[in-house]
Amino acid sequence: MKNLAIIVLITIPFLGACKGKENTFSLATKGSSGTTLAKVGNEKIGSDQFVVLYDKVQAGRPFGAVSKEDFLRELVRLELGALEAMKEKLDQEPEVEFQLKATLTQALLQKHLSEKVKNINVTDTEMKDYYDKNPQIRASHILLRVPPNADQKSQDEIEKKIGTIYKQAIADKKSFPELAKKYSEDPTGKRGGDLDYFSKDRMVPAFSEAAFSLKEIGDVSQPVKTQFGWHIIQLTGKRGFKDADKNIIRQTLLAEKRKKVVEDYFSSLEQKFKTTIFKDKLESLNTTPPPQPK
Image (cartoon, rainbow, N blue to C red; front, side, top):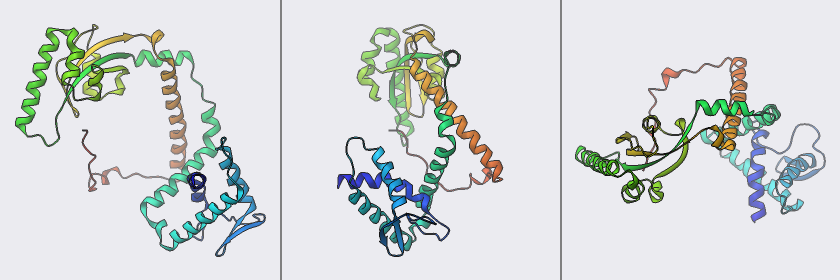
């Protein structure tokens, strides 16, 4: 059963691409499909399709082969499931249609952009330029959360409490880690509030502005309000490019370059298919707001 579950997970993405003009799902393709290995109603599973899918699954399982018989049985189950789903018109459900289009888009990007993305490089000069524009600091913080449904009295009490903690932190800056362990409602409190090194864009704007305005190691910020609650921040470290984590910088730049390749590709498709986005219509939509941070 474990093998079959894995086969389902790996094989399902291929089925999205098999939706034909007749609005049916099938592992059969037009034209020759080799020897018929199984029939499900009027649909046939051919040897050509079997080999393509089987080899794909095997390539992703270096520590255990899947038998051909088990794989064929799983393809039959997928065919049965797809036919029944079509009968129940599940393909017309918005979420299902979204998943199918996502699968097709993934296949499209793999076909046209995989080699281009794979050949992207990042130079040392690019990394240094990036770091000069996005320096990193190390900081610790103390957080007192403000519940989204807190009344004014509760909010005032939390603000008063963070002010009291701030006075203690200023009076003895070395006590900051212990104050964080005692008062902070953030998981980092257990380690003295340590956030490790981060760049300005990693945190919410109000937090970053306060943190990066600190000049000397040990400096403590005044209480700062964000959507998470009230913070007090202490600067605990600075470093230049020489001491920065080059791998993180490289991965960040690679991600940005890959993103640009994809964005440029979709920009060309927008021109090709004459795309128009009506932003003004979004405001009138009745959507569910995101959950508040805990």
